[in-house]
Image 1 (cartoon, helix red, strand yellow):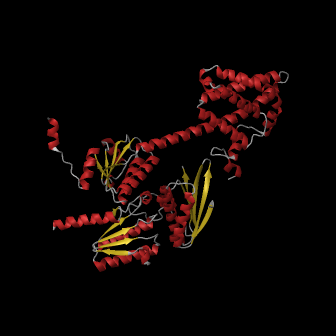
Image 2: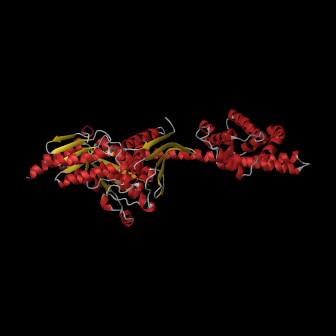
Image 3: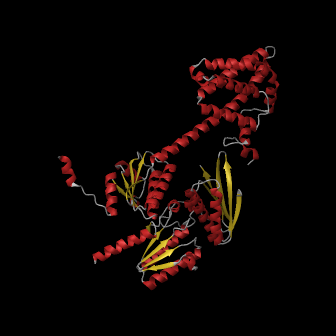
Length: 126
Length: 133
Length: 315
């Protein structure tokens, strides 16, 4: 899969995927496999997928995103989807694609701040 | 900007082209940004069906007029296996499981007019229209 | 699309619709020749008819009001004469149709009530009948024939004019509805990250869509984490509205915002349950205050009363 289309960055225990342009189906599947491998390798606890750039999220894309979330969860990591635009969100719910069960945040900044909050709380709890 | 356009659907790259052309054509009628996304999403769904079930097909985009109003018409046709149980395919499960199967009821919700003609062994034609109010 | 249709402005009736109407009225080429045949008679009677016509209009307060301005009256009389003459000149084609539509638009814009419009046509037809009886005293069947054709044509005209009349009104109504919608759906930023969307009145599909769009854009602009959607002011909720609500909540969630729906009256809650709406899909509270408190709680706010300030005021 072409890494340039969706580079994966590592920020501590978090992996951040920034989708650069509309991904072909094969790319999405490849991304899924690659993410799973990296979660395992780095023992990541969180995967953030940024889809800000996507102007359409159809049923296939939604399914794949959910698969990614389910698989990473099995490996002990949580997935957060960020950057769904207002128009895209609207079209998705019309189609019945709610990504139920998958975490979402407004954008990367939002997701990271929520993670820090949680980390902060977890640390205090210890 | 032509009033009619045919986009042959042979591979995934054409899916992206179809969405783009659909958006371009519809924007000539000054649909809102939200409506353009609905149209592009509906195109994505039906075009994906063509690729998944028939392998190849065609997408016809057309600007249409009916009395006072104008709209965009999208015809997705293929010579694939056809839909055996059209009635069930059009049933709205509306589950949160992410749009299973052909996603036809969902696409119908995105557009104003929606029609499916299909014959087993012959192929499927989906016609949908969105009007600029 | 025929070329001439693209040239004519927004209001236009397509060729085959015109044909259908003529067929329905049984207006044929024969009628066309009959009318052309009395053109000379029409020319002779034009001025006296117009004068009678306006004398009638000016004798009633309601219609006189429209022609208070003498310049306007003169202008309108001239146009009326042209209209009158045009009826017997033949060639009732697309251009004729366009002209009639324009007349309807003008009358509507000026605010002429439909009843006056019909009253005028009635007076006109009766006045013509009188003239025809005079003209064809020796051959009354001819008067009937001409009147018959003229009636078909006048009704054709009335149909066209009234149609555009109604259409103009509808466009005005739509514009006003649009304005009302804009005014009545403010999305308010209560605190950083907290949006309030108070919905008042009945929601139809279009309004629901606009509300959702506005809310989602606001979530993005204001980086909202929590949205309180207050439906206290919504009198009734049917399946469609309930579904719109659920969709709005789900769409906001896709953008990372949690929604709290407040103000669902007990009977509305009952309706929703009976309609099979899965209320687990949305977080609801009884009233707006609870909704805001819950939202603040989720955002980590705590509202504390300032005791010191109160005792100062007491003095």
